[in-house]
Length: 307
Image (cartoon, rainbow, N blue to C red; front, side):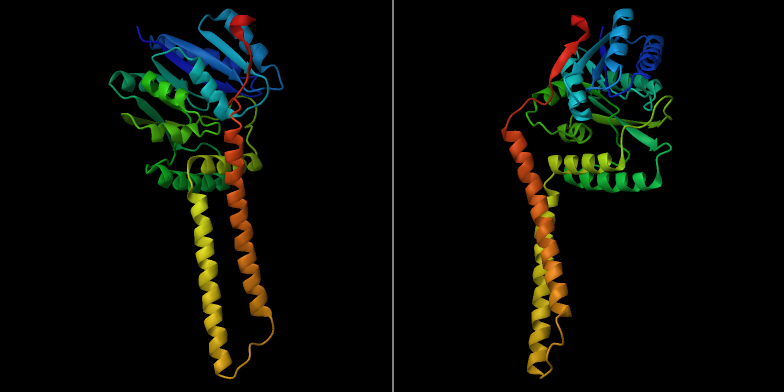
């Protein structure tokens, strides 16, 4: 009989481990789906891993690994996929904002032959309006890069074992799981869900963290920002050309250019474009530097089987 692996990244989620085990297990047992729950402790500072070990001792279907430090959610997802043994894998969150009740529907679609089942948000829950606007803009840019509609996408998805094996062969260190499932292809469908409010704790994402996450994922998955450098260069060249023509016309008409305001503005425009361009290029060089060092994506310090 087919086995379902549920991968659950966790960072400072000690209050939610037991709730996640109880909530997901109840749904899967009711639906008669054989399963394993794989928790990945992403270097938590609280008792998250201790709670995972407690659940593993009480529930044979629960396993867990703990990182040596915080490596980020992307690394935790890929660690869970690497540890999984199921014929299909579902990636979800520990706070149960991705409702477990949707998993049996994903399983049913997988049994019908779909190899990727994308969880699509019908609503974005109670997130702030500014966050929603930024998220839509970000996914519009990523969607153009992969040639698919990623609006309302999420990390909540089911992957067939064939897709998981492909993911595990990827050598890149900085990954964007949410987009890679689109990039991989395979037979794909979607299932809609409503984001549920957190029962315990608060979101671990700050505005600065979200911005950094967006920049890292955008530059890890597409070269579109590098094309911005070309656009800025072209805009500066056009502006310089227009100003040169204007200056020459006024010179031959006997009207001298008054003051240095225009020159200063032009220098600021060109200087700003150059600095932005250098920043974008520098970010990509830094990514190349990180990749060529070939350090592991994450380091597993402990496993519940060894405790």
